[in-house]
Image (tube, rainbow, N blue to C red):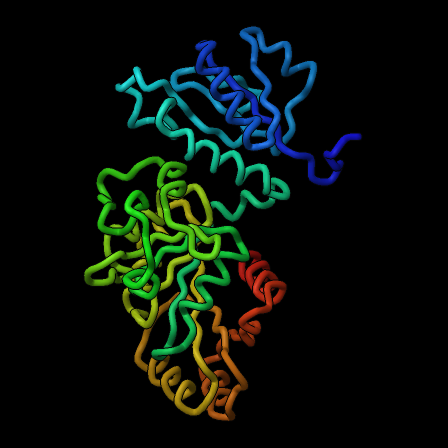
Amino acid sequence: MNNETNEHPRPRVWVMTEDAELRESLADMCRLALLRPIAVVADGAITLRRGVKRNDILVMEHGVQVPELFASLRRITVTGAQDSDAHGHVDIVIPGDEVALLHLLSRAADEDDVGERAKEDVIVLVGAWHGGGGATTASYRLARASRSVLLDAAGNWGGDLALEDEVLVWDDIDPRDLPPSPRLIANLPRIAGVPTLTMSLGIPLRPDDDRVFAVARSLNRGVVVDCGVHLDALFELAERLETTEKRVLTVLTGTGNERGAAALGRWKASTSEVQEPLYLLNGRPHPIFHAVADRFDLKWRRSPRLGSTRGWRRTQEKLWVA
């Protein structure tokens, strides 16, 4: 019985390398990820017989010319450890990066379809218009719903977490010398399943730190940035990211009671930001909130309940297509 469906066939992995030992290692990693490897022969005849599907993956050795048949596929570039000159231009080094490769392939196996890949170019910046406004909760829920990487740019996730020695934290990040995206993601701590870049100790980052910009721009996966109450820095980061090829979305959260509505009104009256965010409202809107929303013509919606996975996924989907 074929486990693949016509709607969402599982991706195959096309392996291109002239090194027989490397080819076998890559094939073994594909099987561990429950993906079928297909070795590409030199004349490419096998690709014509079996066909290339749009959600397949190409794993190729550095320096190999990519056939036109594979031009539109997701691509992972690998090299052997002995080819030290290529290390700065590849995603994976074998041996050494097996865990990163397995993580990358396993994530691809879980993706529903090519539509999931559109989120790789989306960066969502989440802030709150007052303290305790729910930016951290919204950041985590949106990252989990969209299978994105969470960047802690407000100091809300680290400190008290029991982080293992081998995981990456902000102190390990040099914006001028970032590891390849797959390797960086594979070495991040998971917070309830969400890969998260945070602090272990020290002064929390702000969204306008160069490291936040460099990492958000470099990742080949969706990114959600928890900016806390640093709204000026949030919009500064948004302006920088808009110069890249990424799609930048902004979300602001807060309560709709008298205190929250007053804080939102003060902020809107004092800012001249051109980019209009989506406002997620926690709790019931007070009449003052309606007055503020009407005055500034705000685009807002009620925040889903904390434990409503479906609600957060629906919010994420509407945000992504907005």
